[in-house]
Length: 107
Ligand code: FES
Image 1 (spheres, rainbow, N blue to C red):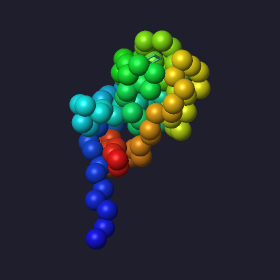
Image 2: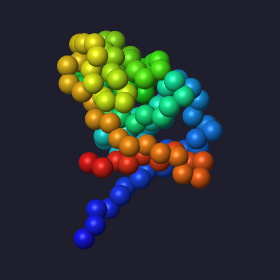
Image 3: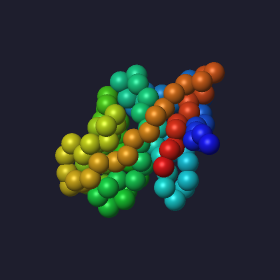
Image 4: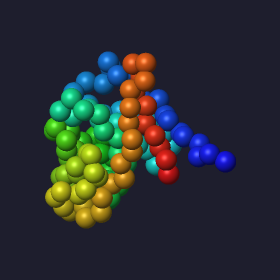
């Protein structure tokens, strides 16, 4: 029995501009897909501090800043670089297939 790979469509690669974020997956536990520094990243949209949506925050190169209290996370590793958040966010694999962004939501 193999593992089921759950790649989720996140829209056209051409539509995700630098510094912008789209949200995919379960609305109760959404995943953010961002383009920063020309690269794609996927990570939990929910800040580990007080659960604000990181998709309302700002992306700079490889980092995303929470809109509520300014925590900064590394989008590649999910590490909380500055508080008040202490816990990392989960990160996910992201790829482009036939011009579509896809995220592997493997939880
Ligand atoms: S909810 Fe994100 S820093 Fe407070």
